[in-house]
Image (tube, rainbow, N blue to C red; front, side, top):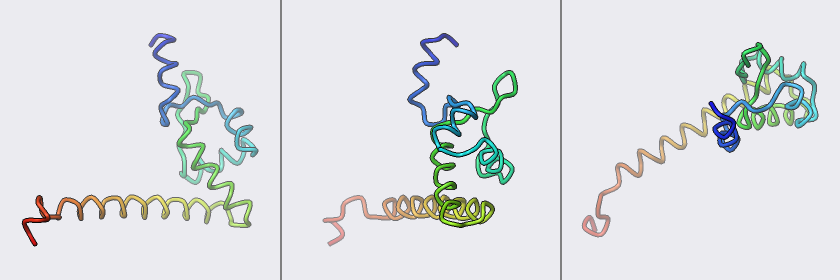
Length: 112
């Protein structure tokens, strides 16, 4: 991969561009908090060739949501479960909407 290829991937929400230290700084939290999210399997950072954790923007958004819940007094395990359930609900709603669209008649005026 060339340097140009790497820069192009920075717009990719799933590209693991952030080190643990940078991610913690951006979120205003500790590296231990990020490790705890990994242990709870809420996020699974990728590893660099040297074994260092790397986080994507998508993972940082999830971690920010977890931090928001923890800051409100929710235990970290419960915060992780809430986020997982929120994600499952969003996916189910998206799937239901797709099924409803697929079930609609091709020409709604012909059905009337």
